[in-house]
Image (tube, rainbow, N blue to C red; front, side, top):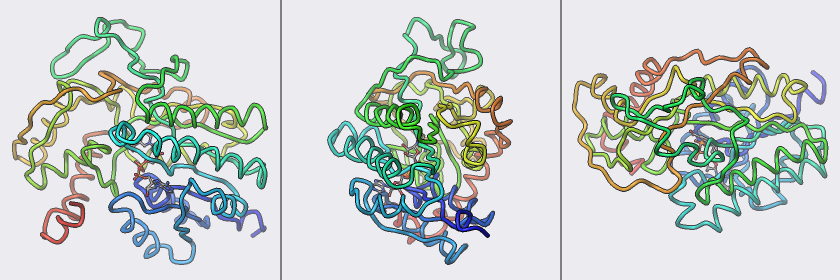
Length: 354
Ligand SMILES: NC(=O)c1ccc[n+]([C@@H]2O[C@H](COP(=O)([O-])OP(=O)(O)OC[C@H]3O[C@@H](n4cnc5c(N)ncnc54)[C@H](O)[C@@H]3O)[C@@H](O)[C@H]2O)c1
């Protein structure tokens, strides 16, 4: 194996939900993986232990903060590629503390880019951006209620939202991630870095410790398992396209492995129109899955919440031949069974996430 091949792939936020699934797949196929994570999120220590128990020395974990330039430089310098996912992930927390949100998401990303520019400028970097960069997208007059969900009234959006949609950062989280998204994109143009932006919609799957503030599919399932009532912010008809994390990982690794095709590009990544679901439809689906009715109440819409967002993933399919393999109904069943195994049986386990 050449020295280049032997260098690790750096995954920032690698103990988080998507990061640990990426790290697992990389290690499984023989890559060395270096994780940089400050373990800020509840539950992610368990992901770190899970990775170590599965892959031993193939996985190295540096506990550090993306806001600190020195450990970021040290990690970036030795990497053959960087997958940048470390972030403050909740819109709600960004509203409570916009400065911390900016420092982690915007400044932290600039730390990664500068480390690459100055110390490892040929290594590819893929950034975890978000559909929130597109803002609300649709006015009330452009959507109508169809059954238990909103749908756009014009035909133009049947295939979903493409990368050409206008940017309209909404909420401090939208602004900080959008800023980072634009820096990552621009460092390809101005400095010639090999960068890719993945604007992700709702990703779900095993090792996701969903809370009311982020990771709603896992949170709804977990609430059903625990018999807890839900609060629905808005009217519950809002729609997202959901993508199983295994399919998200495949898209990220395809983008990395074909960097000559993807460098300098921005892609929307989600389940697409075939995997779109509203909040109320998800509750119906969970009721069918568990045989138990969920109780819920309504509260005001939260800032930046889009009434309808579905990704158009045709750019990814055309460039990389990628398509989701796991349909939502199957993905929900498997996430329910993972969460039930992890949190459903003993009181100790229930308390671990409280
Ligand atoms: N899950 C989704 O549906 C989704 C959708 C769009 C975009 N994203 C983006 O994907 C990325 C991963 O999301 P996730 O769902 O896996 O979230 P997650 O919270 O599970 O993972 C984020 C990780 O970053 C770490 N982290 C937080 N602050 C840090 C800091 N200052 N320094 C170092 N590490 C830090 C956390 O400890 C955690 O392990 C994030 O950038 C998020 O904005 C996620």
